[in-house]
Image 1 (tube, rainbow, N blue to C red):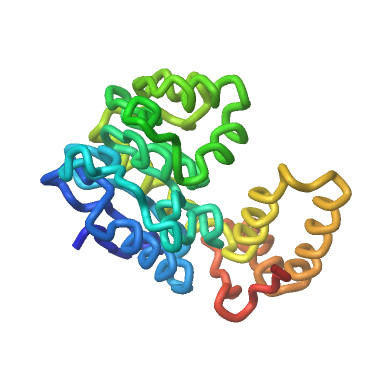
Image 2: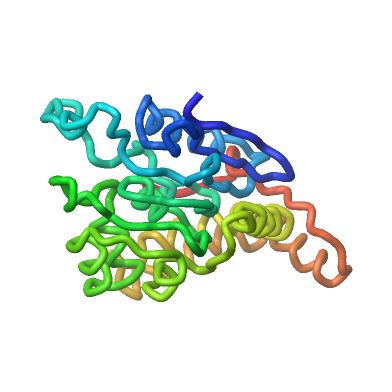
Length: 265
């Protein structure tokens, strides 16, 4: 089992699990991660997702146990640099990366798919592939510029250098930096807050617009926001959210992605 999957309190915890090789990305891990994402997205009982790794690392990058043939010529018909078929930004639920140790190469670039990232302070991060004779993968040339801008993305992608959690925050890669053993707890606390207090359809529609926004002009964003408000306003959760606030009680959301999600792809 290269990926573990657990659900509690409305949160799916997806754990990269090859601790004997510091969770190196291999042995079918990409497919297992894809399966876990699809499982969480389809489950109305899951309201948020946390991606993490079994200590002592988050993910040490590509599995290089095969030595010099690690990056041998791929099959042109089947190879993809995507790492996972369904990246986290395509899920309808918030995905929080609890990066509780070193995240190198693809171990780093898959965190960029997530909506939020919490990094361990003294771990090492970087897109080191240029120093291994290849290049950044997993959509990193699309995600990084959107997160940190072209110049900082170039610093990360073209130098292949590594940096710690504090510099990652300075670069804009993550939102929070904590001691290694506090990262997962903080991510779970945030995920549980989302699961308890936000309406599932509201979050899903917002995420859908957010990840498209760089390709849309203001008028297109307004049209989408208006369209999705037509789905949300007047629905039971719009009343429940207000009444729960006025009555000072936890909300009881009725909306379900499995039955109420309306988006033209």
